[in-house]
Amino acid sequence: MLVESHEKLSGNTRFEGFAVDLAAALSDQLGFNFTFKLVDDDKYGSETSPGNWNGMLGEVMDGTADFCIADISITSSRASALAFTMPWLNLGISILYVKPRAAPPSLLAFLDPFTTDVYICTLLVFVLVTIIIYVLARFSPNQWEEPDNCIKDPEEYTNQYNFLNSFWFVLGALMQQGSDVEPLSLCVRFAAGMWFFFALIMIASYTANLAAFLTVETLERPIESVEELAAQDEIWYGAMDQGSTAGFFENSNNDVYQKVWAFMDGIHKSEVMLSGNMEGVEKVEGSNGKYAFFMESASIQYLVERRCKLSQVGGLLDSKGYGIATQKGTPYKALLDNAILKLLEGGTLHRLKVKWWKQKRGGGACDAKGGGGGVSPLGLGNVAGVFLVTMIGCAVAG
Image (cartoon, rainbow, N blue to C red; front, side, top):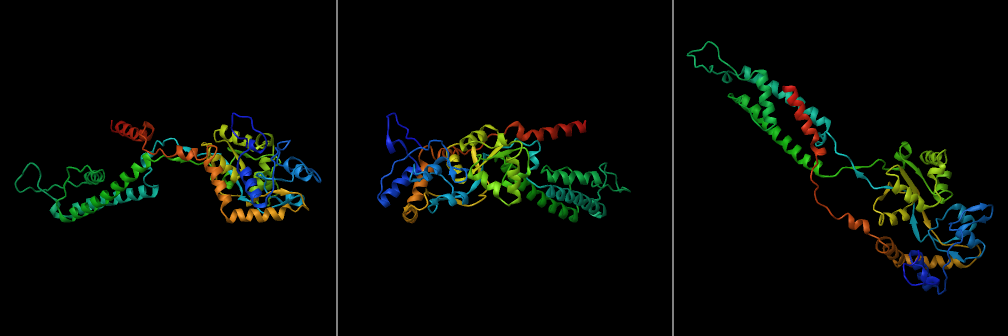
């Protein structure tokens, strides 16, 4: 990349970046001078006809450049035409997509703390306890009492625990509101005590979980992997046309990858296959979640440190590396291999990656933005379901 400066620069001083620092480290190891040259056609390099290559690789083949240091993946077709060094950076293909967005509040968010199974079991226990208390109260002599009008030696005794009152008693305990129906017999009191314990644990668990569900932001994740991406048709996806990433899908024998390539090479090819990676990045940012872009993970990691709308989805689809391309038959490869190995062992390449991925040129900007924290106030959308249930209940009562 070009150095940001108000002064006019020339030669190697015009450039900075990982490749520049790597070239400098290799020159220190091997004792050579170098001059960086920008490729004339702004391409990495692909075989235009048998034995003829364009881009950076073409300039290496025709002797314009001695070797190229850039984010060039080592592929079988490239390795058959040029001599590549051992990888100085390992990576793979991954998916560039927008970051997960906050899901809209659910109308029934107050039901989220428990699963459907828990609600069904709670309802069954509620009905069962109602029946148990009703039966115990009807069969227990201590639960029968004299009528309220204080008739002396009454012929009939009353029992507050008819079925509706038993239902109201159990419901009041579950809602932690109580009722005016009181158990008198020991067996009814014991059954009621067990229900009070059950209600205490369930309400406490519900309250604790509800607080978490209402205050923690739920994120929408339309896709989590390439399999999910291939199985849907709402989100389009593509790659750089005639690049190594597109070639990976074209030559793959994997059923999922073949399906991905069939879409990218189909009727929408002109819309999803783009001329460069940056064009794909801009399309992902501007498509509001309707487009995903396949590119190399090293580039994705660099982008997500700086462009906070972007994220990497899923793992790596393959494993490869960036290498330095040289002409076959030249002595450069063996010397460069040895120098790269020393840089790897000494931790120089790791330090360079941290420097240029996470520190320089805006690296770490998105990490800084994510450190706010705090709890957001609840809006009407979070509790609208409670209002709705209350209104429906009042309407039914009326």
